[in-house]
Amino acid sequence: SIGSGGGIRQVTERTVDFGATDGPMTSQQQFKVDGKILHIPTVLGAVVPAYNLKGIEDLKLSGAVIADIFLGKITRWTDPAIAKLNPGAAFPDAAITVVHRSDGSGTTYCFVDYLSKVSPEWKSKVGLATAVKWPVGLGGKGNEGVAGLVKQTPNAVGYVEMIYAKQNDIAYASVQNKAGKFVKASIEGVTAAAAGVKMPKDFKVSITDAEGESSYPISTFTWLLVYEKNSGDKGAVLKDFLKWMLKDGQPMASALGYAPLPSSVNAMVTQSIEAVK
Image (tube, rainbow, N blue to C red; front, side, top):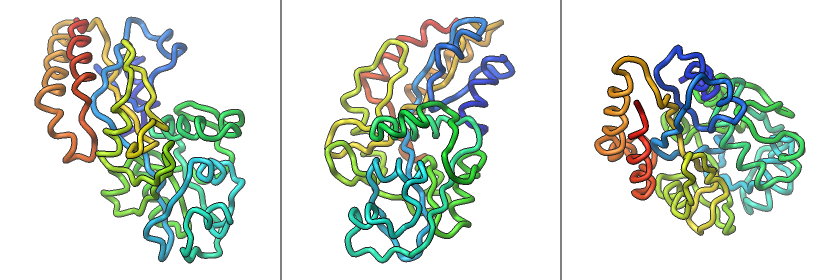
């Protein structure tokens, strides 16, 4: 994986036949493209606050606290705001090491999209993009880089796709959702976040901080970037692959740590890929 920024860049330059991203292309990015690009939802995933804290097995965090940690306002694990969410937990009296992505990343896009919704200060000072100016912290390249840094750095916290935390056996926090419930990322929680989605025709939609008691709040669709018009027989091959992905591929998603598309979205995507030529 090279990050969503790399996927967007390479598909724009046509060095690949399709790209992939967890952060939809902006109007400005699409304007640079010679042709029309379709955003094709493939599966749903979760971004988790991964941490390395001795003796803390079930960390609970709210959106406001996560934002303040990544803003550099909460700097120690003994901060009262963290203690309030985790009564009885024995936190080390240690500085928090913040880890973030150094490359353009859809994982970052999902994470900061969530923070922008739950923290007005984050929205005004840092904002929303696949790459942002981080107030504090160490940078890691890719989900692999962030996972590696968190794993080898005591008292660290970062954010990665759920599957990277699971594969690397890294603890990750439960996050308080819009209904006030602490939810640990799972396929069920991601599916619940997408349950009430009103999908626009261009499929560019945010499902962070979703309604619902069981919704996991840092969830996202992930998209393939496909040109509507393709040279030679590539369009037919791509369309064939996309049809396979929507029918035979979807049941494989759960075993890989992702949630399959809701049936209503699958039906919309099935119709939209007919535009690929």
